[in-house]
Length: 294
Ligand SMILES: [Zn+2]
Ligand SMILES: [Zn+2]
Image (cartoon, rainbow, N blue to C red; front, side, top):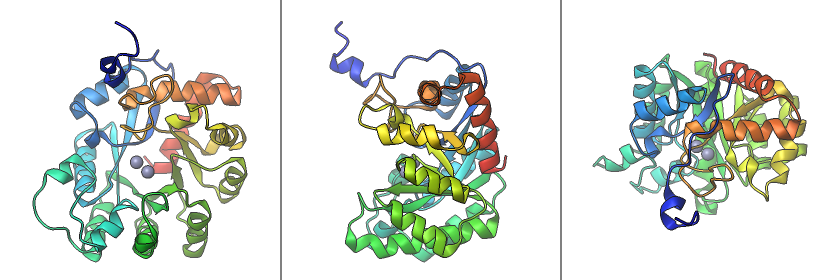
């Protein structure tokens, strides 16, 4: 069968060579992936990805993340209203983010009510972070900007009050994200998920002590800015993630992503930095544990 057949294009990529030093997927969405949680975790563990951080994007997805982290030692949760979710709640669009959420009937609570539920979940011991929150100027237009920033500020406050990590989603909004963090005062542990800045911004993040988590797009041909950032970021602030099911690394770009593909991105990062894969994996594992406090 030709390798570019539509069937193969949608198929799950093969298992990569296992990592010798286990690492964590610092940001994933198991509730948006095919297969059961058990299957996803077993597949990941078989290649050395022994821990995952399950990220909530709306109230129901955050409840699910907390429940799942309560059930599996290998899973830690974060809870939040995604930056594109907050304006939706304000404007009464009931379309949730996660599949679990979308299946539920009923109306959408108002932003305050939703934030109160996130706050309640953030207090749970298996919930290690508040996020993903932040700003997304790509998907949310000017009409949603105010609600998005208010929600971001509320999440920062929550992370600080609960002593949890803050997980930032920053899409086309670098300057505004850095400004709001400065205005509010960033929590002690702040993670830029799917880091999308350049080397210059990496210096700013490094000076502030922000963790930078790199996803599969670091392997994309047009992403030299990300490789430049990987090269200059302090080793002790680097994390790796899948953001699965999105951002599948090359050579599987466009096919479904899952935590078991972390080794592909780790190897790309180790090549960029010119350091040994095991040394990088050791640092990534320690950094993720430190960032999320587990
Ligand atoms: Zn995101
Ligand atoms: Zn995400």
